[in-house]
Image 1 (spheres, rainbow, N blue to C red):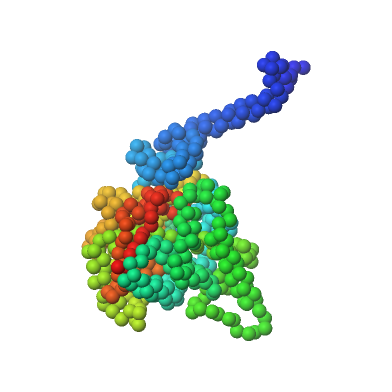
Image 2 (tube, rainbow, N blue to C red):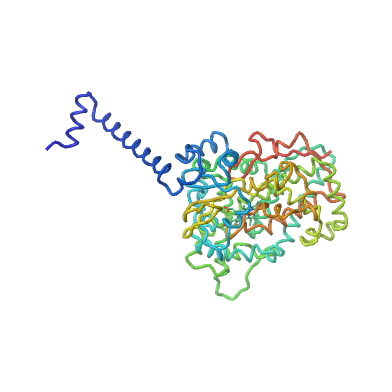
Length: 508
Ligand code: HEM
């Protein structure tokens, strides 16, 4: 009988090919045939083939990678262009759909009472390093729920009220550092200061022996530089090259040590009272005392949970708000005037978050900063595992990752005229329209929305009030313009131009 192996061998000898070359050619042909079949499937057979899409984006993930890597995190702008060309629903890669229609935000980002929401695993490739098991990176809805629930009371408004004294102390520490710089003509990177402040807040929240980045004479420049570097690499390649980033390891070691210590203390049976340092229960102590399932209680998992918090991006939002306040003397003056009464006896009498939230212009500044920082610029895909989602005439099959971009919602010119200008007045009572509220989604929505909303509000409010009150140390922008803060790259978090020199301020 004549076999294919005989045929191959006859063809090989007639072409004079070596066995090695023949094997390479066979592999290459098989690979190409497979890729071709995959592309044909994606373009004509996949359940997503019925949705509008540019062929190249639906055929291969390389199209997206080009914008992520070569064009340095600019796929979000390409998706915006695709929506302009293809309409409110568009396939942005072989697997995912993007919607640009604010009316559907509440239908995609839902609570568990409406529908289950899974994470989209593929989307976190590269950034889920060492973070497996954290609730943020948990795929199935129910497991995510089980892991997130014990954290909710800690980050509730009541929980954050307990953290307020610590946050106010740290804001005061920043002011003291600035007072020492008065009249020195020193130039300081305000973005580094904000990283130190928010880093110290989160480590105070988590640990009883927290870091003290704000005590560093140079505002922890090396550490801040490391964070900046980590953030300016596309997530798809970041952790393949920087898995052992020292910053993450230091944080991990600190978290691990504290969790082990707390576990040891809480398990003691000799009846001696627990040693609690600091004036609040740390997050890790809260974890250890919460009703997590035993299987969820391992030290590595809790450490991973802690690592996620390091990624919180309050500092970026603060950078942006501070820049715009410093850049416009009217905004600064109006803010200072509004703060005058509530901050009159600071630091002897420090206002609560509730008092600060009653100041309309102050609140408007924060909202406008959150709007222009887009929450996360990156897509936040949600997967409905069991049921399809109806969007206009389209039925989105169960299991499809689908997203609505906060960036596009926040910059819709029909809702926010002059969308790229910082105009806090638009948020003053009487100016706010239902469409503005509907489009404003910096913390996302539904069962996987941001857990740190209250903490963020407290962090931002206390530092802004302390820095821009009457009598605060005077500082001004130094060789910094809007292009140093306007967000134009969508990496792990949104970033300004790569060669931004940060926000430099001088103490004249
Ligand atoms: C201005 C600052 C912040 C912004 C704009 C922000 C925004 C967001 C957004 C948009 C998400 C949803 C992510 C997704 O769907 O994939 C999220 C999730 C999350 N955020 Fe924030 N966040 C901020 C600060 C914080 C802070 C300070 C914390 C610290 C406690 C925090 C903790 C979390 C956690 C744990 C999640 C995951 C929630 C879950 O999967 O259940 N965030 N954040």
